[in-house]
Length: 350
Ligand code: SAH
Image (tube, rainbow, N blue to C red; front, top):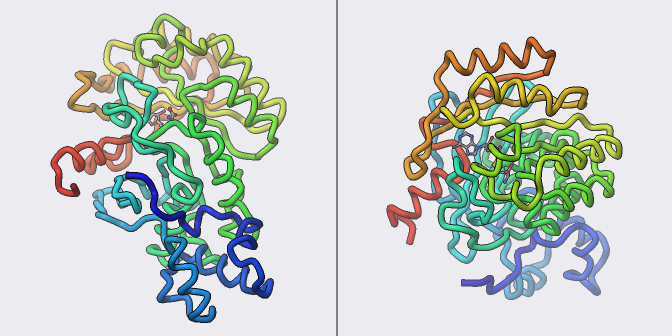
């Protein structure tokens, strides 16, 4: 099913004028405010009824609605959102001491096929529009009692289902929208974009000079090992990826994060820790280790705690900045794509 109508949230502040052509300029601010606050048409009382009726015919007031919320013991929450074409996507809300973070999806499904990840189990269904990516933030910000001025969501990660750089145009538009002064105005320094490593797109992003934090899903320190768990590596190998990371830093001066999911007997050995240290030595970067959240269908196991410690000790010994990320929401299938998969499969939505 494709979209029947566009969503109001797909229009950025400048484009909003086209929707309201012929109207007084202040109407644009009123409508943009309403969209930013995730209001329904019924709640927009400061615009004349005739305008609302006209808009209703052409556009959806909201790009998505909450289908279900799962609460984790650790206070994180998983949101299942239903899009207007009935596709389901997921987002994860994580309260932190530095601010509350929302992890959002950029695609329905994914075509990258990483061995440990649930998002791509059934391939790519479709790209999300910029408004659909943004609406995940608008929706949860509202549910958590946030407003435009006082945001409940202060940090965003593009780390949910999908590969953001495989949906480049919409992702870039989203970045501009979420940080727009007339919108939620979230600083791009508080937004991280996580990618499996589509090298030409990293270069393109660097050239745009946006201040977004780049996270690279690395997961293995050599081409041989990375090819086994991340098919993208066969197209863009580690040498080019590291060059792209250097370029990103040169252009943005933003330290890059490497994500490294520890998988039993695949990438959690001492040799890998040494190889990883060598690979990133001298780069302005930080390594985010996370233990695997095992996916039933994949037959991979998490590294045991002894191996995790050994791995970290080697990185420490080599002076490589690293932390072990708490795996939030494991009890609610917090890892990418996990929840959507079991939900869609059980057929409770369709
Ligand atoms: N396509 C993007 C964003 C989605 S994956 C990318 O490749 O970066 C983002 C991160 O989710 C991965 O780097 C990994 O750290 C984490 N992740 C995905 N599946 C996981 C799993 N089963 N267990 C633990 N972490 C997982």
